[in-house]
Amino acid sequence: MKHIIIIGGGVAGLGAAYKIRRAKSEGYEVEFTLFEKDNRLGGKIQTEIVPDPFEMGNFIVDGGPDCFLTEKPACHRIARLTGIFDDELPTDDSRKRTWILSRGKLHEMPDGVMMFAPTKLIPFATTGLFSWGGKIRMAMDLLIPPKKLAPGEFNDETLESFVVRRMGRECLDRLAEPLVGGIHASDPAQMSLAATFPRLLEMEQNYGSLLKAFIAVRRKVEEMRRKYPIKPGEKRRTFFTSFVNGMQQLTDSMADAAGRERMRTGVFVTSIQRISKGGWHVLLSDGSSMDGDAIIVATESWTAEPLLRPLDGAIADALAAIPTSSSATISIAFNENEVGFDLNAFGVLCPLVENRALMAATYSSTKWPGRAPKEKVLLRGFVGGPHNQEILKHSDEELVQIVLDEFRDILGLNPFAKPLFYRVFRWHLGMPQYTLGHLERVELIENRCAQIPGLALAGGSYRGVGVPNCIESGEKAVSKIFREWEIDLAEDHIEEKRYY
Image (tube, rainbow, N blue to C red):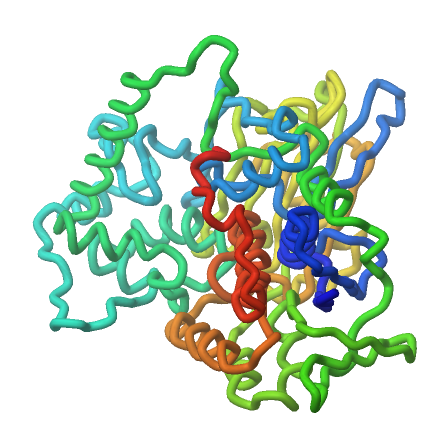
């Protein structure tokens, strides 16, 4: 029986564990043991079910990611395999609206904006989000030629450089940074487009203009909707998807399906050693040890670095070169009749140029049906990120007060509204920063790992921070080891789109 040791019980580690269990169910003699330093599985995916103090139902509070991109198939595939596909939850698009703070006032994001490019003339022309000078500069994207590339040249630049070059500084500050940079909680001046949104670079080369590219995309989407309308009884698809009982429903189902009896929480690996006869030996924080035939390190890069340094200094150096930032989410519940502002929106984005403590706010109980009992409201604030690490030095109580003050000043929250409860979730160094050179670092890591039999890395530090990306990274780590063992898993030949 081949034995794989998995370090890390987040969604990447669980993705690896579940794939190994599926291989075992196909008759392959493989097994795993998973170690997680926290006392719970799921990593940054954490959902808390909070009973309403007045026994009117439950609040469903997501502390980390509250959704995944619907177009990415990995979560749908896992949901089908684990039997929770029918519990996938679309957003309530009847109340879809996003506010952006600009010069101290809230402006509705214009209809037709895709990424950061306006694709409808009238909403763009009439919005107060941009000055007329800013609008004219954005429209000049139609006339600016694409970046010239030498034959074989690797195409990359920062989000700041790209947007300012194509559509101007105001577009970056008022729209692109909060929309695009905010997804990765990244600094636009450092953020690598090739590692985060390579499609933008491709659009410029293929269409010569971002506006032309996104208008073509919008027309294609509209054509597809006309050609393939939703059939009666078919599940409605929105841009984002979650689960009825929160995102932890996904990781819980993965842990159950993979086998919790093979997972140890509250213990972590302190060192990794190669065994001369082949295989691996790990020392654990409780003083015990374990041997395995292969090892998957599914942790943050900064946790993986000291484990791998004795094995390969070049890999460790590349891991150490991946920056990270910390953040926190603060969810607060209220009685609806005390809130005092219009709740028909998904949330508010606060650009960096506004110099606010709040990065963004989500109206959780508007965006997701069933997140709060009737006549109750659940709001979520985001703080931290690369430009405001100091805020995380505050206590939980102080963070709640900061967010309440921001809600009152920015959203118009009634100053007399009393929170029913609050939950603070801190994510220490939880967001990797894909800076310039990230793809080269990842390629080096992967190439050197390929030369070390039985070793693979997984997680959001490498090729995507989204939940589907992390699941796939765990599965690809298993595939790397299986190829070395000449295990040909049947599911690897099934196209992802069949599950979507």
